[in-house]
Amino acid sequence: MEWYLVPNVEYHGQTFLKRVKVGGKSICLVGYDGEVFALGSKCPHAGGDLSQGWCKDGTVVCPLHRYTFDLRTGKGSAGQNDYVNTYPVEVKGNAVYVGISSFWENIKQIFK
Image (cartoon, rainbow, N blue to C red; front, side):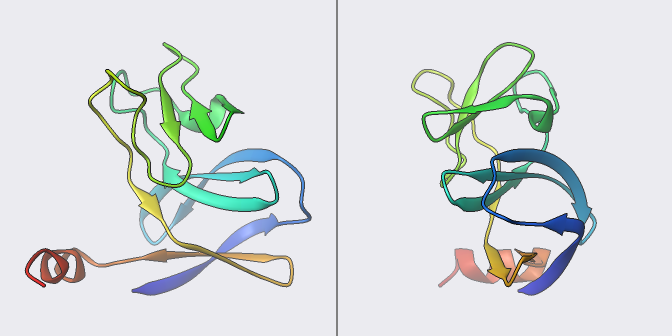
């Protein structure tokens, strides 16, 4: 896994949603309830930009059709049958880092 510093983002404990590009991925970065989460930025249902949505009860809400995705797991709410990818996050000082595994690292994990 490679760790990427998220440019132009400092975390000071506030709630925020922001789309960022790190490691070739478009990511929805979310500061919520004292933590920072990283999820795929595109809703699998209708392609909405999740960073244009909002947070509610530990989920990010898609602005198009109100689909919700768990900030920790990326799972959609019951009945949605979909998910968004999640990525590990580290906050060092105020700097935010997102961990992204390569395609081959992901394949290796399947066979462990």
